[in-house]
Length: 273
Length: 153
Figure (cartoon, chains in turn orange, cyan):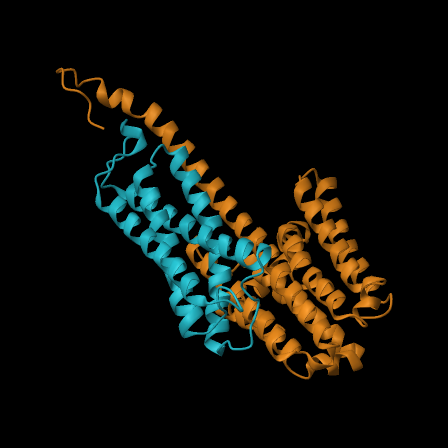
């Protein structure tokens, strides 16, 4: 994470683009749901808390603060941003040529690869393992440009994972509920293993004293689990809502359909079922 | 809206029960033994690498199981398709199996951590694993017996 105010610039650019696209829809008379506005705003605000002073400044000196900032940056903010459905908003707000370009990108082979659940897991867990278990941690703290790339990778990998699990944005191929749950299980177990490895091997070695690293690793373990519980609840709540819609359709059918079919049968036999 | 005891809802009741049972075992392990009593250790230095991986899936699988299990149960309830005896049977089975897996495989084979430190472990290990085995037996008995769905009462 950086030490200055410069991350405010890309954040303002992202917020400005979302605002412009949403207002364009509203001017046209289309509705962009309030919950998506709120999720996107909270997502950008969370990125700001993680990337800007005072948290980012203290994160350089105290590992546990770094871990809190990391959880906000790589898990909480991507979940909120995914719920803000930025790709859906872009598809609706862009003029036709731009929309065609974006659709071409979404259907391209690279997009199919990076949204494939095992690839998302490799990006998510591999990025975290490379940063916390190798010298990349020290290297990135010495080179701000490298740190910015690491931060970008964490946000994007987290966004892919959250979109795969609970995001409304379109994907080339979306896993079913069982596939999404298995993806979440592997991601969560991987996070737990990485956090325990940090605790057991006192990594990253440059992060501070043994006590600092152990505290940070435990915050990583339990903080990560808390966000993953939220992901699981969002995933299952969506499944429950889909089931409810199906159930209502079924009931409407059983209320309206059988009446004419049963009318001719009046031989005293009770209707089956 | 009637579902026979042999229909798919029975399997769903068992599944919801097993998941809630597994989740309860993991929840008790985490809150009572790790956080409140501080008997279990986060990491005790003797853990094998395989132990860390198993523990990761244990911890992640535990809370995931309870979330999924409760949503499945809510779905059964709104469909009036719950088979309570099967939910209880699955619950005991899931709880007991998880307890024994944790007590025998994770604590002993993988050396993840022990139940408690600086005490004679034998009574703790016996209580832990026998209670789990009892859970499995109770669950198996409940699953073997006849059961009716709520909707047919």
